[in-house]
Length: 270
Length: 297
Image (cartoon, rainbow over all chains, first blue to last red; front, side, top):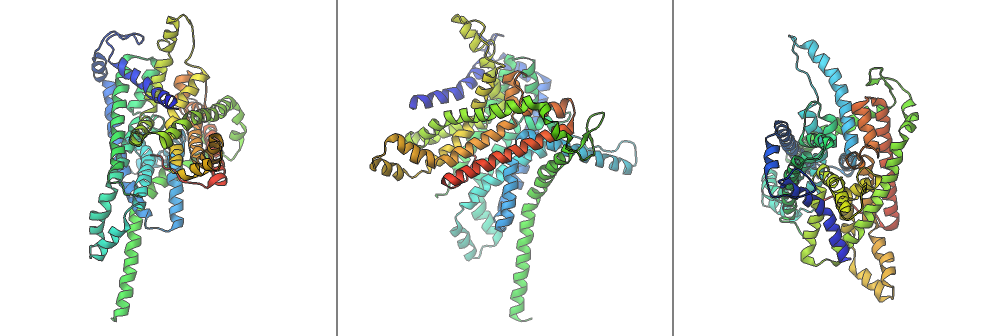
């Protein structure tokens, strides 16, 4: 069985290792490694479209993860204060936001937003004094909102789990000692759930940064890094893509390791 | 004012404050869920009983014609309905021994590291990981190596086999995790008791281990199945336009041929199938050994 497990880990990591290795290939051809070079990284970072897509992705991932961390944490705190029935409704909706395939989230958001814009834009235009009324369109906003839906649900779930294992005695002790609710929250609850919030933020960032399918539908005229890479892959495999893939893989591995580490921090015993 | 009414007043204002704070905490999440989950779902449900406008897009109507037209995409449904369960089953067969080893056999100090090594690929870009297999299976990867030893013209990429491989690769971590969790919670004394009572290792495994880990198996299987029903990247990149999934049909209908009502009907059908899969999995695991919640991370 050990041999089988080793083989599975090799299966999981060898293809990735191969991409990383060939991103440093001096030669053009994918079949032979002709020497070490970082030229493909230089080529990739000198490509203005790629850099633009990378900047977009960083902006979208940061914004949606921040919003998700705030709203998701607030939701988890709120859910600890409501009755079982309200909680069940929220749990079902949050579960749906996580489990519904990205392709369905993407198309339904696309359909709903296009209909909404179709109503709002003429209305705003009719009220606007001059000929250039602002127009709502698909773009940053719609990608951030669609990514944030999944991420918020994820943060609410992670933080909710942590809240469930919170040491109640400390909270009671704090209020017995005449601490205000705000003080209790700041000095007892927040430090205990902070690792979960940070882990949630990091995973939300990783999800948004890596997502292709949701953004593919709601991006409008914008390009994110995965959308750009997908389009380039369909034109053919090049060493330049290996370099981008390596950067993205290394970045997400770092973030996930950081998130895992945060979750294991001060884990209450249970 | 007497002390009694004062206390009642302050209690009522406390309740009010409590409710107001709860509403403030839940407000943003509620708005988000309603605007970007519930309303969009209602929108595609409405679209799915509508008609296609002549220039593409949507025309209001109430007809089941879109649903009657579903057989027009029978190939996509067929591929998905065959490859999604097959993929989930293949994942399960590979995942179970790994989860078993991690939960019951791995040395204590290695366990968390190995578990992290399983989780990490799941959170890294599926696009990049699928791309890695394009690279390995493509003309200059394994086929080139095979040609070197004399096996010419082996075609690996753009086949159903390549899609299946990509599926196992992409979703293996999601299958390992829930099984690991249910095996890890397993009461080891049951295994000893079973052995003490003279059960063979195989009947202990079948009667105790496998049975008690079924909730994890069902969670993993249903999650992988549902995500596979909507899969687009793996069949597109490793199936090379030859192996169409429902996801491919949806991309085509929404972004290329712009037949939104028909696409909505397909999406609603997909969600309905997902719900059936979830309910069935839930039922099976409750009946066999009591349902348990499994965390995704």
